[in-house]
Image (cartoon, rainbow, N blue to C red; front, side):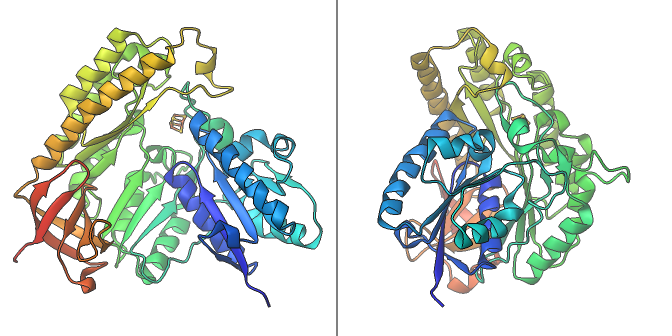
Length: 441
Ligand code: SF4
């Protein structure tokens, strides 16, 4: 039988990366092997994102290129999934005539039958219904033989309706996965050599709110911490409003919970936070950061900021800059506000001009680079435990590992250290990485 090849391109966040892994795992049952050469593929899937206009534009450009491949190979099957697919549904077929199937964020589990139906009888398919079940997130992804880290989805959707965000409309309302299913999945991953898991959800801090057994995100972390073979637990993403004292304490109590939190603040102006419908003030946010740092010295704090949200004045922007000066994030993902259809922010009148957004963004990024370098430099001379991930990208003769605080460290080591925890002494700090030397015990 002829080999069939699948090419998946992922746009957007870590949730999408994991969704793509699930798609590949499901389609291996249809006989598809993954390829990283699009030209070799019998089936191409674009797993899309529509959080920002730029991400959507990239999808359309790529579909244009894929259309040329279809002209040369009429048998090629082309599908789009993810948020943009959920948003456009059947309209996607009208926009892009060479698409075979469109599937939404709750329909990943239907992929094998959709692809089979197209293989048997060429027809256009659209599946974008929201399902109450968690079928589309509970797909087990067998890790590759050399993998040491894996994602585990613990919930789906979001109830927050931040004014700029399309996620609640495109991924549905928040549902938590039963903890026993998650524990089983993590045990299976540990049995297959995985040492680090990253728990995924749009707002992991509210995990378990729908349960009546008292189980919440902190108790889930503690249960995972007992699984032998798992050395490190990470999670993303957190909502500052739902970051509980219990979870703050957990960083200090649970040894396996990595000392890093990504806590998107979005703005340093209370007026803008209110317009964004974020549900906290800058003062609340800073209080939580102080508490985290007091209980877990050295914890790294990363965040997201949007500049140029409608109505953001120079004063509001300056408040964001001032907040950055007070907090000094380890790193920051910063974006220009991008209008999304159907969101509350779209209706706000006072738009910030594009050039001004860009000016604010560039200035903010220069400041953040200073803070990141300052944070990294403060680690020079310190001893850090790394989970060694593999060979360094910078040099064939170096290895690369991450600190518990999510920083990349390059160092000279032996290949058999990959997948293990090793101690290094940090010798030099750079903006995007650290240099280390194996520490003597
Ligand atoms: S918390 Fe806000 S920004 Fe995050 S996914 Fe939900 S609505 Fe979007």
